[in-house]
Length: 131
Image 1: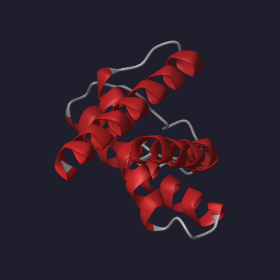
Image 2 (image 1 turned 45 degrees about the horizontal axis):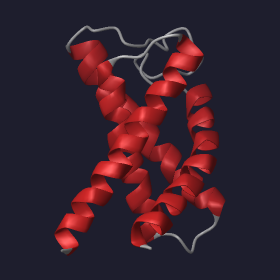
Image 3 (image 1 turned 180 degrees about the horizontal axis):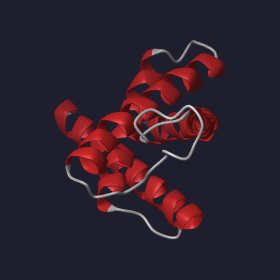
């Protein structure tokens, strides 16, 4: 029974992350790519798990950890999708202090800010699923 609840929880969290990240991209860029949908799902699962583990810590620390997760995943996925597979999903090479055109400080700041509602959403979903 616990495994089923965990699988359901994972599917819900992954689905919410995939959907919300895709919507953010469509709203801000006008389109998204299927790799970003998968990445959004994985990232939200990781943020969810970390938030449950360090729930007693400050929101600033949880957002900093979330920002590190998103930026790290963006770099890994970018190196595979953009540089390795040449799909050109995004390119930050015009941004200051970018790393290989895959990550940059400006977007890391945005990811930090995005982690504020993401953290609240994670706890809200956890409360609903565990009720």
